[in-house]
Image (cartoon, rainbow, N blue to C red; front, side, top):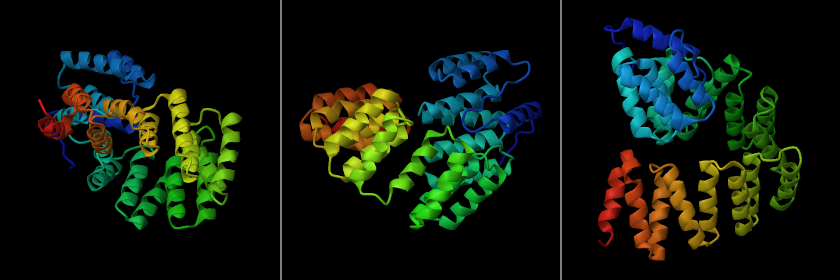
Length: 351
């Protein structure tokens, strides 16, 4: 995967320099003399991803081979779950400036989101070898190896992450997950505690720590403890809301679990909460409510295989073939690598 385009050494150096400074998936690098790119990256930082795409595409209209703009556009498209567009931008950036730590990491993110964990692991290894700064590539490498059931490899990558970047929560969280998987609950709590100490404002690390601490309690008692936290010190923590929904589902209270996800969706509006709300409605047997929720979850990411299959199955069960056709036709232009599956289902439907 490691390649270099000797025909454009200045571009390679510029992109490599930017990649060395970029942190995780945001890559908010201010490049001297490139004010328009800095403005675009400010939009990324503020979360205005659609506007960032417009700004970056305007830059590329002036110079279609600008590797910095191409790589940053790829990063934005990864965050927007537009994997086909992201891959195309990465291909163009690497054709001009070769593979860098930045582009290798982004390609790893693409593979990871598509559940191609072996390919993602290779990309994250390349990113680390190319001098990627920050813990992201090592942590993601560890997560890939967990998925591939290479627990020793995962432990090694996570340990390297905490050794290099002890102030980053990711490595500690992976080590905690590994300990929890092995049944070493006290060790898991210790690792989650270190993650929380490294970043007290990290809502996910805090939720992991609380989950470890209430793991010995019954789901009912643990649920009450989490409810108290959500009403007081951890108000709006969507990860704790997810834990509460899980505990309620474990109690058999599927309706309450769905309502918990509804609250999380109301508070945060994030695609994950919407997806889990849809699935919780499905588990609770509330199919008529689950159908539009699943449709919206599919609209968030038309390439999500699990959402796609559940939505198609549900609409067929409901006999709502007209709704199914309308949704698939509407989302087909954004289906990317999943367009074949969309066409296949549309061909099965009566005209």
